[in-house]
Image 1 (cartoon, rainbow over the protein chains, first blue to last red):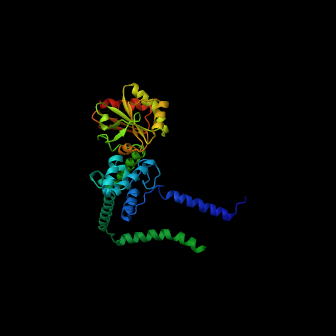
Image 2 (cartoon, one colour):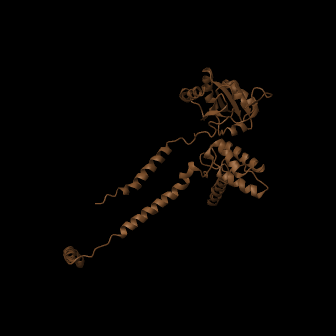
Image 3 (cartoon, each protein chain N blue to C red):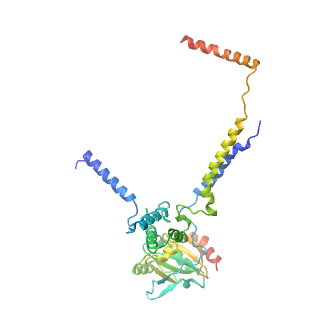
Length: 167
Length: 175
């Protein structure tokens, strides 16, 4: 069978579509009739991290444990648990690891405040640098210095300029 | 010349951060401390693999230090782990199995083929107990003290070296 360029393009497009479909999420995402519950489900499954698969949300992973966790989220939402209840239940079982957004508490304060503190320190350092430079003034040259500068400049200038003028 | 030691501060900060991150690189990302350490074994009410009419609960684990091992017939690593569990039983360790997400026939056939080191097996076909234990893959093992509190969580396979290096010391520690 001859492979036409058009056939090749079509095959590539088909392959890309298959890959995209595979990356779009897990196979058995729950569907709620209630749009508010659906939004909360989508948000929770996107921000809870699968404990087995290192860096995938449970909504993206096809690993069995991610499926169990999605099932728990769906059942808990249906029975009226709050988002915090659900996150808390997951942390109680799998540890802080499952939260993509760590909670704000004393233990995680460095995590949350760290970047701000670093930016602040940088700004302070820049400020201090500017202030210390502001005091420096360039003194005008006195007559002796000016003369010396001119002799130095003239001594250097001449051969160079002559070279150039010959070209 | 003015001594401007503070110019080295950014370099120091960089070195400290680099050391911190370097040390983090060497850590195994697949193991981490269990969230259940120091907590009571989760409540459950399940039948045993051996007897579908016998219902057991968490009080089963009170009275002696127990090594609870979560396994399943579908789990290839569990097969490689069985010789270590049998050796632990030989050394007097009290073992209870959790047959996780399995069928009774397959679970029983597994024990017939690879040996049965367990005093009994809790049958958890839906994986509900495993979920409450924070199990995210079999095999996983827990050391439970005589009061029914979880003291140690071993994620993954118990290697032959782990028997003396990790498991026996943990068992003895909580006696």
